[in-house]
Length: 165
View 1 (cartoon, rainbow, N blue to C red):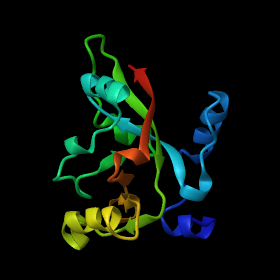
View 2: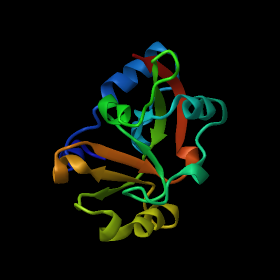
View 3: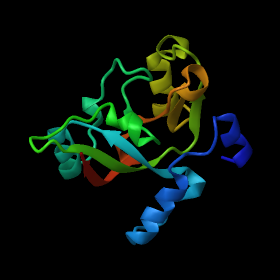
View 4: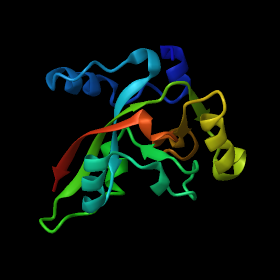
């Protein structure tokens, strides 16, 4: 997407610069701008974070009642993913750093995307339509966070688990 298009989508991805720095410092392959590849955050329970790290994401566990349908949800703000993290026995919270490809995103800025356009319509737009992901612009409609959703687990790779207190 062009810089002008990102401006219409409530700005550039917040993790773009730091994601590129992390990739370079960790000697990972560079993030591919042409396919809208970024590093994002994903919050989870400790046991689930460990399973994701060992086995990768499994779309069959995605909630069908998610705001944007049954997909894998990522955030560009760690504080958003923190809402889904729970502590382990040592009071440490997991935050998964995920490499995700958005490809051609379906931009959604409706207040109730689960009704308009609807969960199944969003899933279909990415699984058999002309899009690869959904950008749910909750910044624009409710002044919270954008949600970045993919419906194919091959578009997301869990690089690291960051444990914090």
